[in-house]
Image (cartoon, rainbow over all chains, first blue to last red; front, side):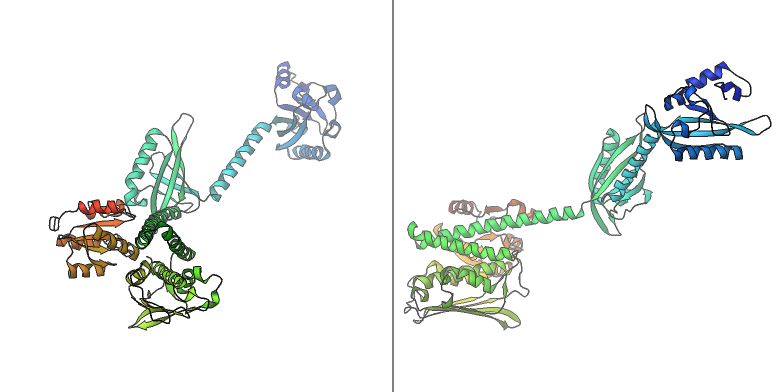
Length: 462
Length: 121
């Protein structure tokens, strides 16, 4: 039977010193005979098994509770060492009696007899669980970082501490910079107007070792530029020296353009609101001028403002690019057409007016309609209103021709004074439409003939 | 002799307000115009003493009219919904009445205008 004397294997040199060391080391040290039986195990191995040497002596791996695949693997390795005289190195997971699942790195080496034949196989096993765990964590972390860099919509770059060399390490291309590029840092990359700002940001970041941050344009192609927002942080080694700057640049071209168009839009909106307020002011002032009695003026002011608001609704629907004549006509006569659409004959082709002319036409038609309801065709049950419009060619220029004709109303009397409505029509509409307006009062019904140039392309801005 | 005013404004309702207001404030309306071209024509034809200029005339800025009025030594003021920021550098010192303006705002601005010919030609 094999004995506990490791010294016997050590070629008849039993040494109390060696034995003491072997029993003290945290590594597992053991020896198999040629039949795969343990003929030596140090204390660390016995602790792992959770048994004494007396219990383990002469046992095979299977008998000591190793899983069959595990035992078979080691026995094959022992046989290989015996057959080849070469060492075997490997790692394997194993359930430690008290520490749970661990990973072990082991080496099997041949023990040669005096005749040069392998007479036993010695092994040393080290618990590498922590190291493996750290390696695994590091690998995962690098994998994640690499995935992040590649999935990023930003351009990821590294710059040398002297800020002379730039490498693009991942992410989406920005401007003319793409993944894998390594180039000398140059202000040629930066838009001339932004160079000073970028230089300042670099100087400040390098002097204070705080994150670099800048918004600037980078070269795209030969003559284009792309707006980017760039951030970089200093990476330092253990003694605090900066070894590189690591950064990301985001393409903000679209955002910058969007912000610029938003600023324009807000300015334009401000102008339109102020203009509309001035129009409201004018409507109120004009109405009060002809109706100094507030109680009489109020319904007229309301009705006129409602017509203005309804026209704005039509224009907003078309994003203020213009409005169809038909929509303007319907909206403008809406307040007296309600419930009696059959008394209105509205006809004409699809024509578009620019916003300013649309508002002018709408206000004018609204006045005609108000007048018709009070004194004209719409003041009696059988009266009718005919509104027909068309586009006429006039020396190569398209003109809107619109006719308002009332019939069936009480006999018309020409007004004795020029009220807001007729003034708006003849004076204002002519001005706004840059056309002609003829207002007539024959006894059979009010007539209004409007001619105005149509924009060559519908929807010119006001 | 009352000063004769040229109104340059593309919005007819605002023209009407000015047409009503100016005589009440002691001015005569010399002409009205809605665009740069018609304003330059009216300046030629009516030789006004003063001008009130809207800045945005159907999308076109009225500064070319102001340049011509400067050349002729005709004083003018801008009436606009835009703030002072809309004025180009060469007109940065011009009088600006913000829309919507009140009767008194306009009266004060007009009263403060230099006499014709007193402006730098």
